Length: 322
Ligand SMILES: Cc1cc2nc3c(=O)[nH]c(=O)nc-3n(C[C@H](O)[C@H](O)[C@H](O)COP(=O)(O)OP(=O)(O)OC[C@H]3O[C@@H](n4cnc5c(N)ncnc54)[C@H](O)[C@@H]3O)c2cc1C
Image (cartoon, rainbow, N blue to C red; front, side, top):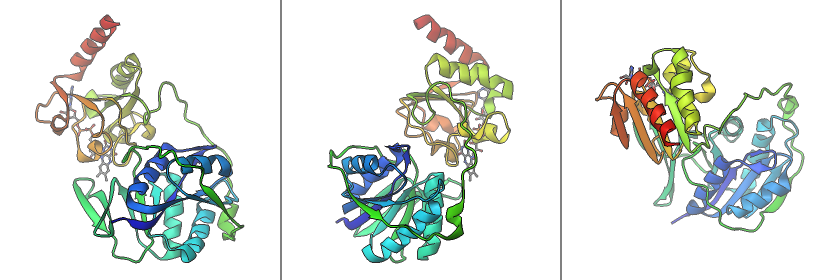
């Protein structure tokens, strides 16, 4: 048994809908007979074509009014939900998604569930899987509040699969009075310098943890191995908190979710909060000097050894193969 209507708040970079939004749209198709998309931006036509391809029949297009559309989107969605009664409204667990979601929760007076990585309909009720107690316990939750249920889903929780659908019908929502918050302006955008593949999209990810010993070891051990494998480099929270590498590289519950063909963990213990962000990788190689480290519990290949000895040998072997 499925729900009757789910809305998905989609985000786009320019005129390209984000993969995370397409993942949620794909999942929504399994859960409801009608899937519709909500979008606050200026690329309505292109977005309607993409969300239609992924199964949305209607695109409710919100005039963003400012470069920070959360407030306007929340006001528009709250008004629309009152007349159209969706069973659930799904968001991506992103900065923009959470901005709109939090405001919508206040406007509709509904609770939110965040950080979800599974969704199903059980006996007609939407069931949502997440981690609690700092990520150490996985639970299934159901909202007992009235619809619409408001839920944020972590990127990479589902695969994005096209349904080869026709472009969604556009419902242009007229101007919304979002008050003074709609006057917020983006004054400056800082783009982090990026070399090599993006962490979330790389086929190979090499991450370093506290076991690499010191900040100056990150480049020769982690970064160089990643470059040799034409991959991206990441980190555990321990070394982000220590200031060795920027937060943008953090993998895990409070960082990025990655799903490469190969994930190499160097000197990472394998705390649940780290595993949540990388456990769906196709192959996991762990190098750790402690044979009892939890990371070996999910590794496809484990090397018990010192990263300072194993990694240089690994690099030599890879170089010899080329
Ligand atoms: C709410 C919350 C959210 C969190 N979110 C995240 C998150 O998003 N991502 C994340 O990573 N963590 C997160 N954490 C932190 C997490 O619980 C761990 O503390 C962290 O992942 C540990 O990082 P680590 O494995 O690098 O360090 P440690 O746990 O200290 O492990 C270091 C490992 O290196 C090994 N080692 C030491 N020397 C060597 C050597 N020479 N060669 C080989 N191995 C060696 C050790 O045996 C050990 O296993 C979160 C925690 C909380 C409470």
